Structures are given as C-alpha cells and as structure tokens.
Length: 187
Image 1 (cartoon, rainbow, N blue to C red):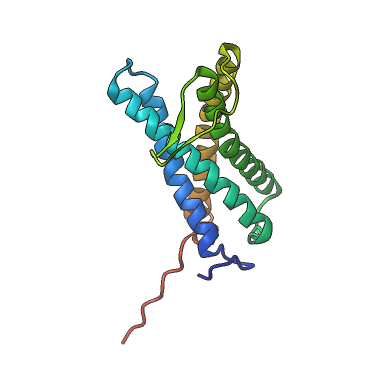
Image 2: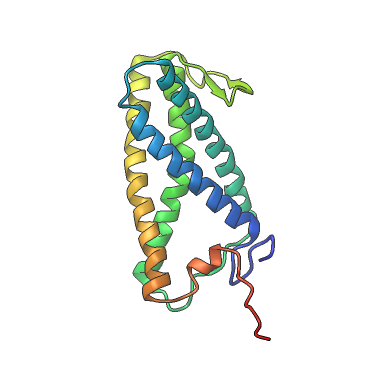
C-alpha cells in the first residue's frame, strides 16, 4: 500500500483518516448516547469534556481529510457496481463529510450559546463561536442530535455495503481500504 491513492487502492493516508475517524466517531456516538442520560455530576462533566475534545479532533481531521481527498483522487468505483450502488455510495459519502464537519460545529455552537467553554484535551480552549443564546443553543442541540441519529443510519448502510461486497459479491471493495496482506509462499 502506497502513501497516496492509486487507481485500484486507497493509500495509507486516506485509509488512516478513514479508520481513525471511524473509531473516534463510533466512540463519540456511544459516548453521546450514554452521557445525555446522566444526571449532572463530576463524572458526567468529564464525559462531556472528552466528547467535546474528540469532536473537535474529528473536525480537525475531517478538514485535513477533505483537503487530502481534493488533492488525491480516490480510486474509481469498480466496473461491476450497479448504478444504484454508485448513487447510494456517493450520497452516503457526501452525507459523511457534511455531518462530520457540521456536527462538531453544531456542538461548538451549542456549548458557546449555553455559555460552556470548549476545552480541547485541556491543551487550549476554543474561543466562543457565538454569543450566549438560549434559542440558538436549542437549535444547535437539535441539529447535533438529529445528525447523530442519521449518522448511525449512514454508518449502518456503509457497513452493510462493505460486508455485502466482501461476503456476497466477493469483490475487492473492502480490501481497497485495508493494507494488502502479503501472500505466503510455500516452501
């Protein structure tokens, strides 16, 4: 696997962005669903700290990932893909990029509008994105929440597609995003 994408394979950088962001986003979704059910406590505030920090990390990674994608063309779809698969995959990717840029921004807006700072791993605190506003906080919270639920659906579709291609179609779709295994030679 090369650093850059080729016509047939994603490169190490694109694959790295994919898997790192995927792991963080899955963690954020689970953490978000859990922490909103907690009563206020030091533990709950610690979870919010980690959720905000990881969310801003996703925003940062997605900006870099988008720049990488613009400057490093991804492999073309495999020739046997059906048109509906190409359209669904394209829509899903557009949604992923939109949601993974919008959700952290909505979270930042929500925190600022509620008057809560956004500290990033305790290294620095982001400036307030907006002034304190109860109505804006409610709007941003709803956007953040709705995008989260839709994101769960999009991830499910993405995962189902990858598994379909791997186990039913038995094509190279999934293997294009993972490092190639070296074939063992028999002695």
